[in-house]
Image (cartoon, rainbow, N blue to C red; front, side, top):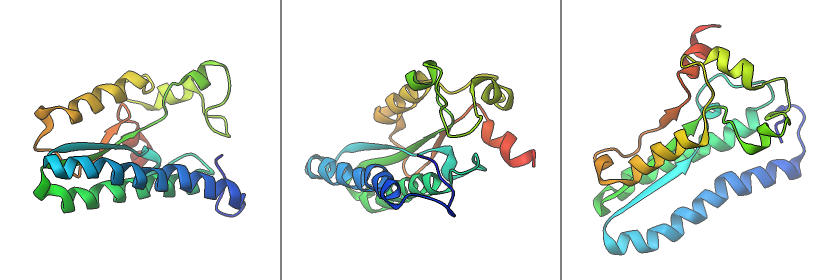
Length: 165
């Protein structure tokens, strides 16, 4: 899935663009049909820290699609404020998933759970519950004054990557 900008399969890039970008656009469009009528809503999109930090090698094209998610979230936040609709992206880092638990590599390189733990200030990798907790908060009325903000969930990994070069 992850490839260099110099060598990539155009069909795979198109598939990634369809899922990550066009899929998000279609979901937003459908949700807005109901939210605008109600003059209330919460849109929470999933991006990635790859869009905003020094990412692993060969993730440029993936990062571009995830950066598009941020733009697709921040711009509508501005446009939809008059309808009482909050729009925020969550940008998780490396996430411990069932795929990784099965001993398969998360990315097409040597990244693994132990390496990720070393570079996160909290000394663990992001787990699905971390993303869930952020989404539940953003969906609640307690987040009514938060819109257009990228919620980074990475145990401060981004700080390590941007300051250790």
